[in-house]
Image (cartoon, rainbow, N blue to C red; front, side, top):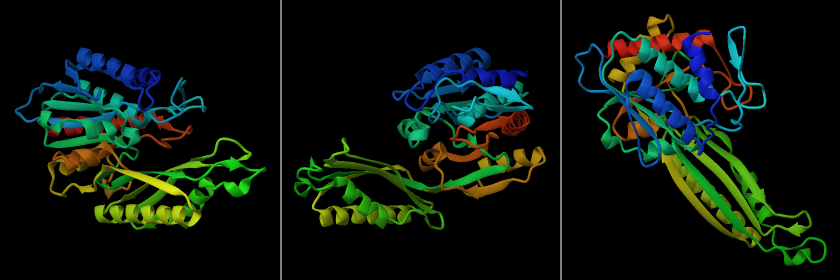
Amino acid sequence: MTRLVTSFLEMVAIDSESGDEAEFLAYLGDRLAGELGANCSFDDFGNLIARLAGKRTTARRPILFGVHGDTVKPGRGIVPSIEGGVIRSAGNTILGADDKAGIAELIEAVLTADRHPPLEIVVTREEELGARGARHLDVTSLGSRIGFVVDMDALDAVVVGGPSKVSIDVEITGRPAHAAMEPEKGISAVRAAAHAIVQLEEGRVADGTTVNVGIMRGGEIRNGVPGHALVQLECRSLSHEACLEQERRIRDVFEHAASTHGTSVSITSELSYRASHVPAESPAVALATAAIDSVGLEPDIRTIVGGTDASVLNERGIETVVIGAGVRNEHSTDEEIDTASMEIAVRILRHILVQAS
């Protein structure tokens, strides 16, 4: 096996589900210090920041490369296998190529580039929970003004825009009662929640705007009128104003349903990140498109409704595009990546490093 593949397999063997990344980030800090000579530190949230001096370059300002160290569930006890050049898990877990393939590819690109500018490599925690690590990152400690997040599937992609996202938690309180002996004394919180949910417009509600109910919990016993229900949902849009309008609509629907059923409702919301767009003339766009073109692919400049750390970095003044790592079927137990795609990703990253020098 190549060094790149061996490196990747070693990484996925270390569990790092969101919120439980400390061991993996400590391992990665040691690797970046030992193999790349990086000056590594952890911020107060536990994000890893690695700073590398330039190599055979006249560039003085660093450029940023962002990756994330956490994975979605189920991500414990990953057992990878290779068949026909394709790497998969045993089928009962994800593979973790999102984003450990990106990390392995970035390390290999830096190791093999004959020159590169000063680098700031940021490995965030809890990216899969709404870019929490990036949101806690103190960007004033960084010198970069352009960046590249290696966290996309397609190798030809250059993501220049992302959405606003609001996470919403709804708690509905009714009145519990025995479901057989005195159901008339109860007020079902689950029924009120269900009423609201069926009133919502879900899915792609408009071009570039989505709404999704992800979790609904209520009740504790089969023979009891449920007195409590929890609904967790989100809305996203490439327009910040449209995202906020969806949040208002969601609040109105749940408040009306709660009132109709005689329940009370508590709604909390959190803006995970704000819609952003990198201008076409940004050096980050030029470097990414030239690198993709150098491997014989046609750059696909796009905006996505999915969230990445780039959304936060752009909001805070670092013009950042997202480029591909070559992973397929991410966030599922069918996740896979082929070694040829990983090699192409390394070539793309190496081209950026050399051309930015």
